Image (cartoon, rainbow, N blue to C red; front, side, top):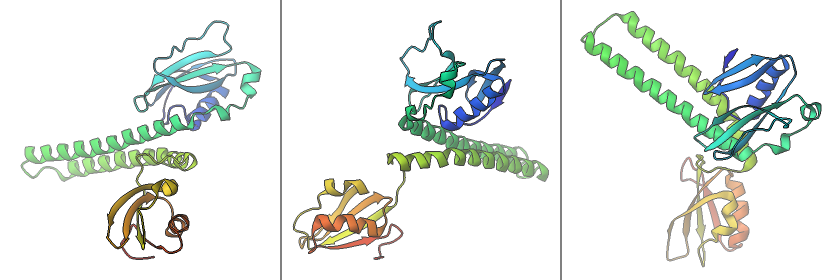
Length: 261
């Protein structure tokens, strides 16, 4: 049996789906991109996944309680996803939630999201090139139904790809928030103005808010900083004010414009 699914390799969503099929007597045998292959079995297995370095051997011994099913090598991040299974009762009942590598899972989710967005771009560019070629062939004319079909197919495929991208984006967003890992993520840029400063702001003390950048300063002790952050204006001021002292005036401007909120 073969099934096609766009899932983050090694994610809880993928593992839940694979174990649901295993409960129905279908054991995973291979993974090729989005294609999953299964074989019918009589025993009830529990499937496990694990991220391991690419150069680590994944063979199992005959005495092992785990049966190696297949491996998948990811490019982003560069790791192997090892799929194994066991029909041993203690392992089928064990709670292995704490063993999940969420940092690697986040990178895998972001890699898949980037790949899907690349597919959207490639499909759109390819459709535009095809329509352009047809317009040249028909010298600006041609059957109207043909162009309607092309646009309709483009829209359906793009909508499907966007839906799949959103399905990957949502758990990745939750992982980012839980891990507080925003490397490479877009965040609003808030503008922080400090007046009556005797020295530059100690960025080490406010680094938890986000990524800071000094934009400018004056000879009268005024400093302008930009900070990429998810914090609100009130939260930024609440953190910065104790650091700079009560004599310093703190103004925080929205990323939507340079007006005080």
